[in-house]
Image (spheres, rainbow, N blue to C red):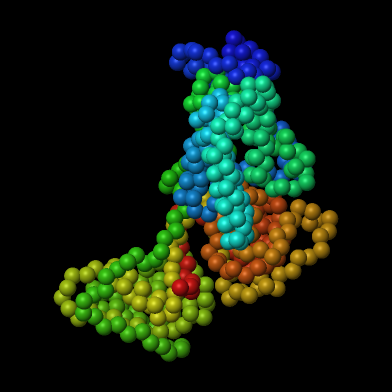
Length: 461
């Protein structure tokens, strides 16, 4: 209770006075502040969800969840928990004790932060060069006049510390509005959107003054860990299951060609009897479609082999491979070598998708390749109020929207970069599946078991 009263009194009238206390006292203070912070932020997040439920605000909860690859998600997760708190604490809290070194580090971090943000939103090389040049000039100016600047900051911090403390927390919270869409409604309700960060900023500032920089940083790290982990688990429970993560790799792996061999690939005959033979010394196909040749060489189910180009998929070929020496080489190595040579001939590449159980797979319905270009958005009526319009979008952008609307993991085995108009139901998965199939000829289904899929496309290089 004593620590709670101390925190309350301090937040009402913050001062720069530090305290000399032992580790146990600091640790107990930290636990009390952490408990209060978690409770207050939980309430703030609950209010956010009420506003979001009534479409008053449009917020993105943890953009890391919508990255396509698990490695990207994991790296973003770790950066959010460990790296970002260090940068933000150095920028927003270190200077609250206005020593020369603290001020210098905070200002340098501020310059680097602003330059990085401006560079990311810049569209041209000239703008990036100009921003970096101005940043270098300002930083040089600080180095030249650092004594005057440091003395001026110390004076202001000494006389106006209460304002400095509040402004620092408000600015810290305010910059987090950039994590969401900058719409009119979001700007109007910005205090609600950034309330969790403002609360955390006030509490971290208190610990920074009373216990030291590392205790404020620890609060920030634990805060991010607690809330990011909860959100990730609620929205994507498979994230923490390392056996249920999407894996994408080039196929086949590098294989060494036999030292002495012969290989011929030429055109086969239409409507002719097809045969194949696979032994350690000989592999041959006669009058066989390219898709079937690949499926047999890769030991893959035909249904799990998807070609971007159906003309090449249905091309009929003759293939004959003979190993003319007694060298030891596995059938697997020979298969991979032949696939690589087949891909070279037809300018193809393949990706192997290891899709976990529970993921949703989006594929193009066979023989309906151009149907999406004919899709038009109909006029809405009373029955279609729950439809969401996605205009001039790629299939990948459609998948991103489905993941956000339905909180599911999706994989699109369609790499078509053309733009289409889509209209999908907002909260009905069965209706979504029927609409995608009936209107856009896209098959969308959930994987009930872990599945391997091959996607063969044209090589770009």
